[in-house]
Image 1 (cartoon, rainbow, N blue to C red):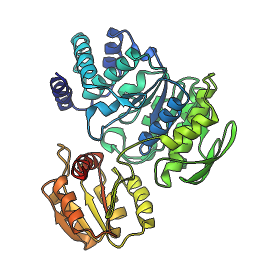
Image 2: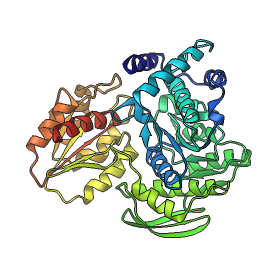
Image 3: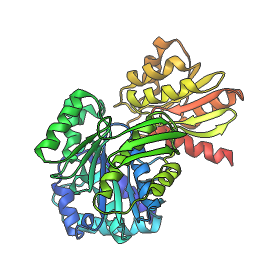
Image 4: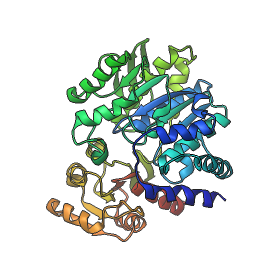
Length: 421
């Protein structure tokens, strides 16, 4: 039955992205409005929203709250998208809830999209599991995102970058306007965005809705590194925080999560300094600067746009390694040139592959775009083959980095974990 449920869900993808909230609102109404049964934190952004969500959910769990987490896309298995207290929905529950939502969906006028349906699944599951607080990540944008039916305790916009431009707009102000669409009347807004063009749009929308705005660098800040960081926020300063996730960019993500948690505290939820410390130290977000092997060093990072690639570049530049091999597979709607510009100059060898996703950029296209960098390029028939070749060729003091897309990293991770056993 779980297989049939997933086949049905994936079949909805052929309907593509369909802006508007009327369909999902109708569906949730038919299900008894499960989104009203739990408190929530709503997180949008171009980069870092997954890590920020993971930090926030981990802190809430450590504080003793039954915590839901809804993210997308998944890394290895669909179930990962819907979690309660760090555990993914099991196959039996998934099949049962798909059946229930499917019955209600027959009474909705208009074809539901894949994301509308899965959002209803998540909200119904969180309601059934008597979730206290759920951390809800947008799928894309914000204004017309299916998750935007909730009224959260706090709205979060991690940052604004050029991504999903066919749907969200071609300029930062246009994309910022879409993401600012999650702001609700009187609900505080936390943002890690510091660029004037995007921040001014977010600020304007917050003023229009009488929503307190807390921007990074003004209302809160963080110093140090992932081994020891000092956070200064609304309620004062916490020193010596340790982050479970690697990379300098995770400091910003952690600080945005902490500011959101401070807003949640204002509603009377008891979250101690110990819960904050333990939550940051225990947070898990696989596939983001994740080390799977040490000799040779095998690193996974789902950098899918130039900003993510730039953060990965900063990490790779600090690695003590003799040679670097990149295994790259990218979606054809991403800024491949921008990603290559950040990463390819660092590589000794580049292994190109296309993950098993319809939107994958053909290897031939990647070859053409890699040509100007004059690197040794090896094209593979699959992500698995690219990883196998890269690791075979790597010496004990070399590094292999798999990147370019969460789909590439997901396939690589499954293969590498299996072969390590």
